[in-house]
Image 1: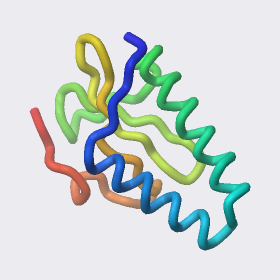
Image 2 (image 1 turned 45 degrees about the vertical axis):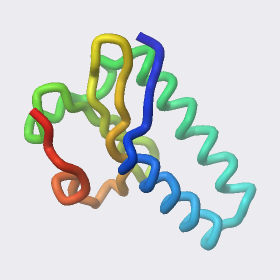
Image 3 (image 1 turned 120 degrees about the vertical axis):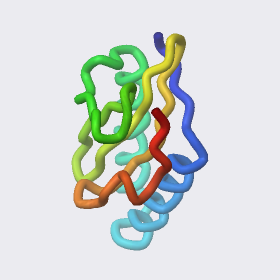
Length: 100
């Protein structure tokens, strides 16, 4: 497994993170952080078991922290689906529908 896809919600999360980072710290900071996000998503796609199971969200849900955010994803046979990228203090239940 070495592929990941972004859900619509995760795409929206990344747009929000981008805008906040650009407003607060500028383009250079955003480019660096985006590179970290992307490399972490690739790492998760190649090694999906390194995330922590998140049973309160569903059977195949995992989470993986990155700095001030947490990447939530679902394992599928040939890929992972990134379902959300949320601030560490945010509740995932409020941001995406639970699929079991």
